[in-house]
Length: 87
Image (cartoon, rainbow, N blue to C red; front, side, top):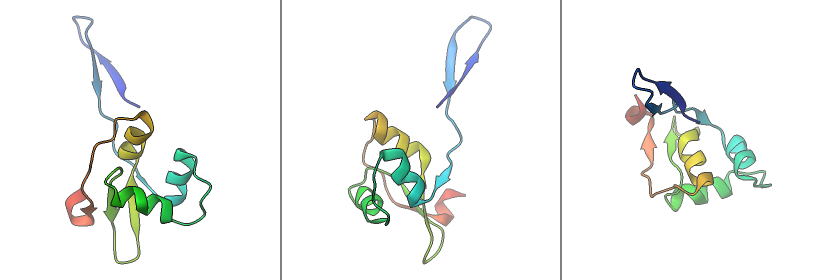
């Protein structure tokens, strides 16, 4: 979801929404998966369809913008990012 900004010339320019980090349960809910584990989400990451951010050895979050792009059909291959890259 992008918020429109209207300039004086009545031209609409869309600004990107801040990227929210989602847990695998939230990703499954958005994509309509009934899987109770992270396996389906991790498969999407391995295929390069959504972006994963590794917060630590046991914590991974997923980019909301990349999940929404996948749902819209705009997904392109993305790289897996680490917590240090997200800063």
